[in-house]
Amino acid sequence: MRCKNCKEIFEPKHFNQKYCFNTECVSVWVEKSKKDNWKKLKKKMNAELETTQDLMKKCQSVFNRWVRLRDAGQPCISCGGELGEKYDASHYFSSGGHKSVTFDPDNVHASCVHCNRFLHGNLLNYQIGIEKKIGGERLFELHKKAHETRKYSKDELRDLIGFYGELIKKLKKN
Image 1: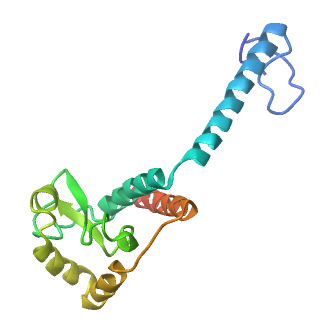
Image 2 (image 1 turned 60 degrees about the horizontal axis):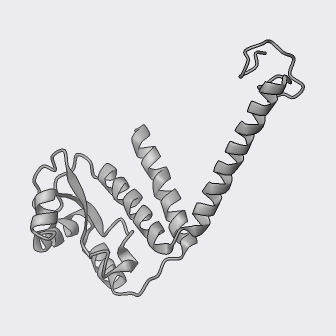
């Protein structure tokens, strides 16, 4: 095996040894190990310092990406027109006022930028479109759920990020 630093051939003493025992190579090895350990520690400390608000933003981003992938190729939920290259993950019940349905797949659908941003969701037509898509019974359940009080814990948000991240991977494979 060749040393990663000096490129000399050496016989490794351990199965994962990448550096020979020359003084210079050992010091490079030690420095690399220190950097790697610091990166791991820093990542762990950053995860511990993440606030619920940070995790909500991250979760919203991952969830919206999943909605866009799920609804790709479908028409706008509000106007029925083509979505185009840029389109939004539009909430029927706003995520600001209705935390209980912020990450509910029945509440969020692909919408063209015009309807979502300039017509504030085009809600009357959104309601017609959402009823066609998920049915009246599920829409009624969504209305009931939207008015419940909900607070997410950090662990719940991390789980949701992981869950929707996995769904994104599955959709990208197909």
